Image: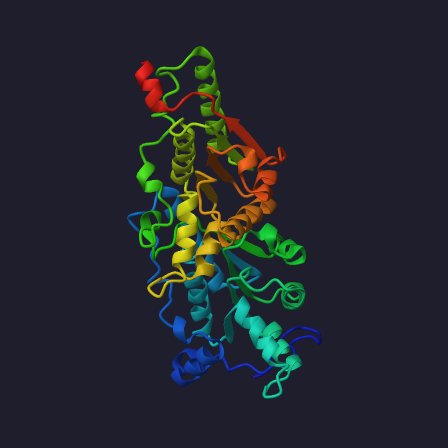
Length: 412
């Protein structure tokens, strides 16, 4: 049937199945729609089998999953505007997006689910001589599909062409308020400014942030052991000792360091760097105390020594690795809070220096909360990294002058 609509309406002139012949009972048509919409591998994703009460989650993480579940379920019933789901890899955002898609599919609505990189690849292939579909036809399909699910926005190659195509697609759907679901693990501030401005339009955007960790690697990423914070659970502000075996000046220095660390943990903005020429001077304790505090608040925290971080990146190239380099690299770059312990003790190979700089520079530009500890002087650190640490606009440096804790114990 054709709906009586005014000229200019997005659905003017289109044919729709008669409401009395509902598509939900047409299994053959549903299967066709799944194939067309790339939903075959997501056929099992529903609201009924979505879990948000996992035992290793804290209260805030459970609350963020429940809130995302309720918003997605409401959107599935009435898909007006856009739904934007943010969170780390494996936190459940793609499951929820697919659950919405399957709900609409069962209501006989055409849905297309595609990752941002795949979408751009599809457009690129239309330029090939063997392509059965022209660029204009493919692009028109993408921008006019009744519901588009764009998964992993922000991981695509950020070339000028890619940015322009994504903007054209999303701007078209934004102006016509076509139902669109976007999932991303990238900070919105790092996206194309034109796309970012549309994703922040609260008049049509339903935006949800999931703070739960990767469900495949629960409890401090237990499977790949990227974060070692579980080893420092006893390092808290309550167990921090600025009193034992110190002079009056050293005591004042340690108290000041503890207060600044606590203030930062309460409201983490920019970077905090602990410097001391002594090992075991308290800088790692304070860094871990910040990390433990923020984890209790539901933040996604990665606590790792710099040397271990680089080893974990190298391990992704091994034949037995279950995690890709890109996935691990992105999870470190975009962590809600990154704590890099012992900067300067890592291998000084060219590859190591470049990967470390890329991570630090990314977080520097994005002003993502980052805590660094080091026993090296500024001139001993890679100059590119040292210049960013020296930027007082986003970085606060705390120099701990008290000696190492074993020395303080002997004094005591």
